[in-house]
Length: 289
Image 1 (cartoon, rainbow, N blue to C red):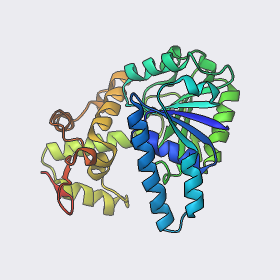
Image 2: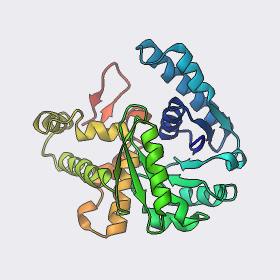
Image 3: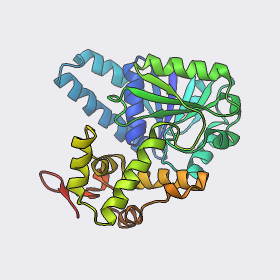
Image 4: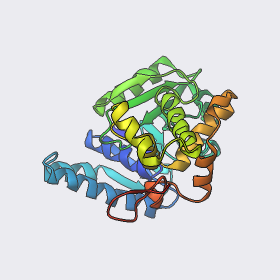
């Protein structure tokens, strides 16, 4: 892999771009407005500077990595990419439009990957120009820090595409978990029901936010409680994933917790909105219930 296109300059797209650039690979970063891609590059510059401050990178290494990232205004420059990674919001209709558009410039030997955290790969592959070269490549947030990538082949994904995608993930210094194309794959199939159940426990008044998180941190030895983690992920993203699990399987055990729906409807999305299960507007997070 010499050139990788990244579509979506949000938290995930920025993290993917930074990790790829640090691995020595050129990145073309695109969003609906080039200003968003340029803003993301500026954010990556700050993230690299923090690594320099902690002696994780030299100033020269940070400068070189940043220079590998090029914000672009549209998909045309991605005709040179060996791999294009879609990292847009977790909405299938948005992702499909991206696949159809970028498919017009996708090289005949290039791979098209989705960073989806739950949506079936086989189903989305029908919007790609060649399902044999379409695959799930699920990164975890924060991408430069987290050591795992899920690789998810669809029904039509070729063995060559799987092998090349795994090799790319390993080039980034990540460990690979290969999952079958089942709703939620491996990690979110396990994680999101836990988060959703924690919200049920909160909504039913069994325990407070602080005690639910404390119980899981100390009783399960988790570094973060489930409600704290939900705020970090984004409550809207959590709800989208739970809905995919529920709608895809039809299994009532995945039904979204009503309180999770209510928080999202209120715009309390977690850290990114300043308020979720915790209020982040002060010096320290404070539980909202």
